[in-house]
Image 1 (spheres, rainbow, N blue to C red):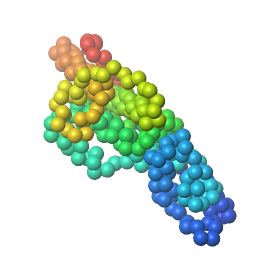
Image 2 (image 1 turned 120 degrees about the horizontal axis):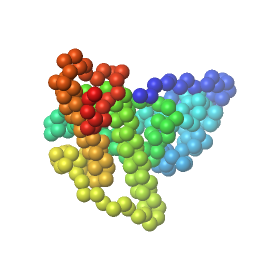
Image 3 (image 1 turned 90 degrees about the vertical axis):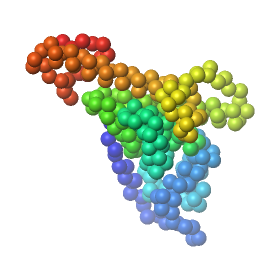
Image 4 (image 1 turned 90 degrees about the horizontal axis):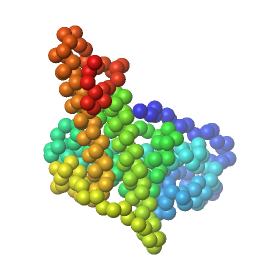
Length: 266
């Protein structure tokens, strides 16, 4: 799991942040809100510090009082996109009613992340680039890791499963947003062949947030969840067999390797 790092803006000179006559001094939250609005209006390519300063009617140098550079600003935008909110809790509760346990929770976390990314233009690209640089908070990865860890797997396996799911959702959503923007510009886009698959084999069909989940994404999420479940079952079966064969056999500990599916305990 990535370590959260707080990014402290560089100390500016007083003249760089002193507003001109008639200008309003803005807070960091004002700058962030304006950046999110510009992202939604123009997209990531046109979200520049100069355009942001013009939107706020300040000198570009004044922005660096709040954010040391553009990447730090984009990390804050990424944190905003993936922040916790009541809608996520509601989705997890609805899924848990229909599919209790960690398998439902891991699927719900993946669905929620996709929805959060789709709320903002180029949302997936902003979040993916922030994660790639190790910036921002680790909320999406942490939620996915906790969901996978509830399966009873070692910490390293839970982290690996979370990262695989994170990459699946980020990559698929980024492609989805790029195709949508190309269509909006009148560019002919070749859609991938549709995949007839419903998340959790249709067990969540009446959950509104799942309704528009593309079949290929649903299949990928199910493949990861079912694969992890199969490894858990295989590890349990192998452990039971080893216990029956050796009186003093011990269960795999956190420092031992997690057996691959079908690998007999030795």
